Length: 134
Ligand code: ECB
View (cartoon, rainbow, N blue to C red):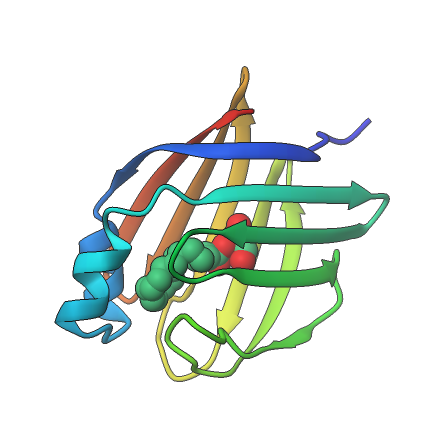
């Protein structure tokens, strides 16, 4: 049985989101707003199909994918750069590689207890976020 990420998750902590946003070239004003947000994630997982809705009072972002199938990602409302993304399992971790203009871009999700972890990577920056089950 694979891990089930389905559910509603609220951000409780974020480490080095500033560094991650700087690596993505996000402007000062947007970073100042973005860093105080407390986004909520709603994840739906059905077999190999996933959708992840990240919602905040400022911007929201939706993505859906199937494990092992490359898809075009537009990062609309974020840095707007297009990339080719693919998500695979690494044991119980969900690993996304986002190939495009930025080196080493991607993210990893995993669960520990009732907490959802998200590591966001871009170039030499790593942001680690923790979400608690709502
Ligand atoms: C969507 C809530 C955050 C909005 C931040 C607004 C402006 C900052 C602009 C760019 C910063 C780059 C990324 C923002 C960080 C998180 C948004 C989604 C991160 C992500 O890729 O989540 C994955 C894994 O859960 C699914 O899209």
